[in-house]
Each structure stands twice: as C-alpha cells, then as structure tokens.
Image (cartoon, rainbow, N blue to C red; front, side, top):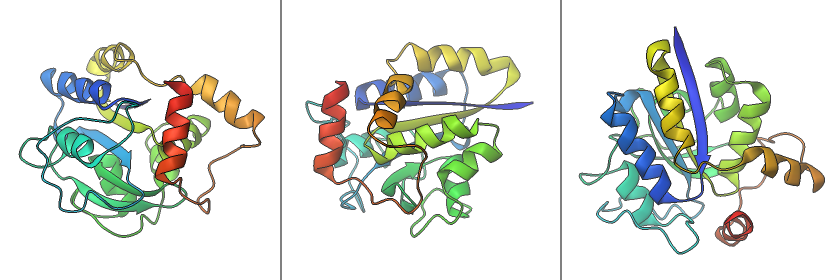
Amino acid sequence: MTHTTTRTYDSFTHARAVVTELKAIGLKDDDITVIAHDEHHELDGINATSPDADSNGVANGAGIGGLVGGAAGLLAGLGLMAIPGVGPVVAAGWLATTAAGAATGAVAGAATGGIVSVMTDNGVDRRDAETYAEAVRRGAILISARTEESTELRVLAIMDRNSPSDLTARRAWWESDGWSIHDPAAQPYTREQSQKEMQRWS
C-alpha cells in the first residue's frame, strides 16, 4: 500500500537536507515532489549552480535551482507551472506533474486540478491539504514523498528531524486573521508578502 507523507519548510537548507536523505534511503525522483513559490517567474531557464537562499530562507532562483533542477540539482524534471490559488511555482515530482496533467516534470501553464485535489486523491486529509497549499502560497517549500508502508516511518523521521514548518500554529494564526480554506481564486502572494510571512515564523 502506498502512503503520502508531506511537510513544508521555510529554509532551503532544511528542504535540501530532506531531499538528500530521502534519496539516500532509496526513494526515486518520481516519488518525491518539491514545490516552491516563484511569483515573478524568475526561475525560467535558470542555471542551477548555487543552493543558497537569502537570510530569511525565502526563495531565490539559485536556491530553488540548486534544490531541484539542472545538473547540480537533486531532482530531475524542474518545471515552471501555475497552481490556482498559489500562483507561479517551480516544481518537480509526481504531485506537480499530476496537478498539471502532464507526463513529465517540465511543465508550464495552469494546473487544472489544483494541488489540494491531487493531495486528497492520494490520501492526504482535506484539512491538511488545504493548509499545505496555503503554506506554499505564502512562501513555504513543500516536499511530499510517496512511499510503501515499509519505508513510511523512515520517511516521516527524516522529514520531522529537519525543522518542518509548524502548520498547526500557522493555521491557527491564519484563521484568527480570517482565513478558513484554500481558495483557488485567491491572489498569489507577492515576494514582499512572502518575505513578511516567512520573517514572522523565522
């Protein structure tokens, strides 16, 4: 039986460590998804040579490129796509390609099904899927792994020891500010809004 384990991260250092460790225990590129916000499409055609992020752990082109794309990246199939309610993202892996309705990770255009429906179709609780999607919209880096039952606990341990976002606290904060569910029609966060959000939780 296949299981889906998902977490979000605020730092490319932590996200990269997760992907590295997942691959070290035998997970294939096709079973790992990384999705990171890119509201200005600055990563189209990037040269992925430096996995650095800025001081707040907020996305920059070299950071995402070094994490998932190009010869220096950890995952094949880096692609630029748009997710309703999240906006432009750079993504690689099964969740992204399924959302885009494409056969490869190098996708462009609008994802018709949306990230929430794809996650719920793969066994993720609806409330959790809404929270993950909103976290990406606000600037977090999503990593999702599709595993067999025999490796699920190892994957969970890897994700949880690399400083994932505390989405319980964040959801409570968002709800106190009027948020309730992920809205596919919502405006994507700007870089400034994403930086402010990440600074709040850094």
